[in-house]
Image (tube, rainbow, N blue to C red):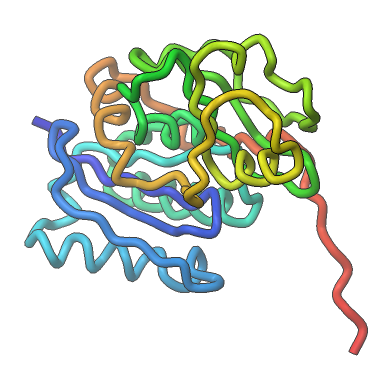
Length: 225
């Protein structure tokens, strides 16, 4: 048996979840602007209160490592590290796109192609076997055009996430099946992935682990008033 807290802060959706041996107990989430900084610890506290569970009962903490929002990933990992240090618990890191794909594992396609918007026509993407989640193309940033990913979309493929929606709208003739519902990675989809890593003792170095940003941070100048 294992009790794992999962934290997902890579996009606009901030979410947390508790799983026991990979089975979801409860989840909390917020789309409020600035939720990562303002709501994350409150969501975690609400999660434990709802289950009547103490922090000391945790066996591990899982974090969505990226790619995604620079600020969101940094806040999520800092929170996870602080909990791991304070509770003396191991840290598990999961690929954000694999978490997004895990929510559609077993769908009747050959490939799952999650995409997270990375501004303009660039996305963070990867390709997974729809039944095993074996990675067929490594997570990477990609500038999309009408010929992108043709070696995968020529076979039954499901493309989803806010980046996929943007691509379909810009190139209506793209092959593949598009899920046009806006979807984000969620902590509730981390349970079985985190449990597998826990059983294999795939733990991270809490001191040296950094988010998988994939791209350099690009700040914007504040608007003049």
